[in-house]
Image (cartoon, rainbow, N blue to C red):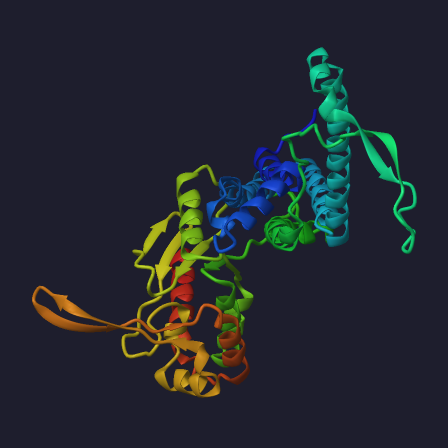
Length: 395
């Protein structure tokens, strides 16, 4: 009997479609049409794929915790093959070679279409009355390369090969946007491979066993909004002596507040999940999300610290003195904005200071390279949130 793993298959197959010719052509055309638009946020197929990922991971956990060793081995054998196939597909050299082959085939088919249509066009009887436009008598030079002689001509029959016009165009990939397209697909593949490797690595080491033999210890997972958050958390753990806590959990990021919302929705709506693995979603201070508990899934928002310079993002945790040092190092780090108005007749002034979106990575590197315990002291709030939930789950 062939075993079927629906969520793995759905996620894998939805990812494979992005490597088909028509999809790559669609993505490159969309990028060319509006380069400033984030296609990742507007493409329904990409959105669907992102929604599949949590279900895929939950299926892995369910198989590990509720099935036989034979099923576990079958699942990871298939998954290993599929992951290797994705690595081959995302190889840059192979990717560009595939596009070149598609374009060559499309051009060949187009040339054949033009040839066939032209031939059929001139076979039509009614075209005979236009013969004088397509084929006529004319003159051609006998000595075209003689620079110092009088030009001589002879009468000849001239065929107007340009008389026929075809409206179709060859279907080619927009080569000006293949690098951006590759970067998008590379990120999508990394999403799949990261989940696959997190558990597949343990399986290959022989550490994933059926519950009847040996239970794998599943660490709690803590999800943050952005990738720079993870660098801040790791640095803070080192400075605040929280590396032991970090060793007991896995930290991941989802790319945005909206993606955390999607994950929360999936984890709370699909209550078929049997795994007791704790999942904690931590939002930035400006997310305005309420704290909620749903079984083993927890949602928390980092409290806003009003006296600090930065008003949005995890960077709000840095004290004013830290931000002043950062600005002295590079004033492009911070965008300052002030809004004035009245509310119910009362005047107000609101500061909306943020780390510049194009400088987030640079600021993160600077803070992690130069930060002290004092700079990261307020990150203790995050560790307190995590430890509080872990303590609740043990009681």
